[in-house]
Structure formats: structure tokens, C-alpha cells
Length: 281
Image (cartoon, rainbow, N blue to C red; front, side, top):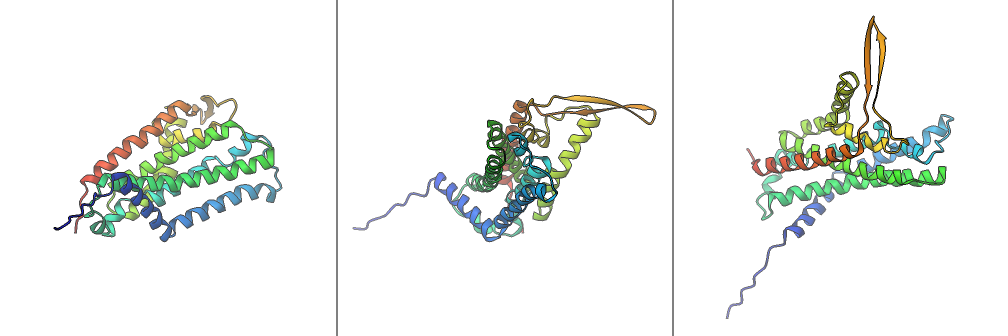
């Protein structure tokens, strides 16, 4: 009598965990993860070391101290680099490097591959954000003696902003044809283009850029201010004419909805494009 052994294929959840682990290991082998953590360490060192080196005192207000870590030039740079390294070419590299010929024929759904890669990026960048705030909060307790609930709200907003940035990176990765272009455009869009558009449209145009991801991400730092800043406008006399300059601040609820919207919409579009994209050549 012949016995036939039947093996059930791994569930989608098991395959998802395998893809996630593999992608994290791939980033570790490529030294991107090490480089990202090294850069984060350098940024944290400068934030903590520069005040005493320049003869300045630390901010003694608990929220004010944490705010030194959440300024746009700090947290935005960290998230822009993270999204670039771990999302900007997550999809397009499989086509450009021809590794898709080895991966795609396997009995794994493209949706599972996509979700695993996305989850790996969230774990890596989210871990970086948690380390960033962990150092900030521990340092804050050492300097000011306490940390407030607003710091934890800022952390949650930063994590949400990070996931939305990953969504941008994945969308560009499925849209672009080359890794270099995807990486450069991801960083430029998140760190340069969107903030410049916010300043132009909002500051000079007088239109509150609620639909902008970088504008919504500003809530990460503003949430630490008490009271929360309100929109203002100033009129100046320049060159014989009156010039009105606007200062807009994101409403926290609107910012959360905007970041969730970017994550959901760009994530869905990225998955659709990934499913339709074929290996060529």
C-alpha cells in the first residue's frame, strides 16, 4: 500500500512573517539598517552635546526639552532618510536587480510579499522612532525630572507620520523604473519639496495646506506646545505694498486623518501597481 503524504502550504500569515524576517535580514546584510542606526546615534549625540559645548543650558521645561528632538530639521530628516532607505526602492529593486525572477515564481501571493515588505519597513523605522523618543524621554527625566503625557502623544503622531512616509516611499517605488530615481525622489519629496510647497502655498498664498503630509507631520512637534498654537497672519509694508504672511498650524485631528489617508490610499495604489507590474527583459 502506498501512503501519500499531503502537506498543506503555509498560511498567508506564516508567509507574511517569513517575508518580513527576510526583508529585515536583507537590510541588515546590506548594512542599511546599521547605517540608519549609526546616523540616528550621530543626530542624537549632536542634539544632546551641542548645548553644553556651545555654553547653553538645556531647556528645563519637560515639553520644551522633548521639543528639541522633534524639530522639523531633526525628526523630518530621520523619517525622510528612513523612508528612503527602507521603502524608496523596496519594490523597484526586485525588478531592476532581477531578483523578482527568483521571488515571484514562488507560491506566495504578491499581496503577501507587499505586506511583508511594508511591515518590515514599519518595524525598522518604527523601532528607530521609538529609540529616538526613548533617548529623548530618558534624557528629559535626567535633565528636567519628569516627562509629560504630551511626549507620548508626540510619539504616537511620529509613528503615524512614519507609516505615512513609508506609504509615500512604496508608492514611488512601484511607480518609478529605477532604484536611484525612486530613492532620490522619495527623499526630495519628503524633506524638501513638500515643506517648500507648504511654505509657499500657506505662508504666502494664504491657503492652509491640510492635505499636505509634511504639514500634517508638523503636529509631531506642535503637540508639545501649551497652549497649542493657532493660525495667525501678519501684514508688512514691503516695497510700497502691503504683504500678508500667514502662519498655519495643523489641527491634530485633521493631521491624524491626513496621515491615515496617505497610508491607506497610497498603500492601496501601491499594491494595485505592484500586482500589475511584470518583469521585463
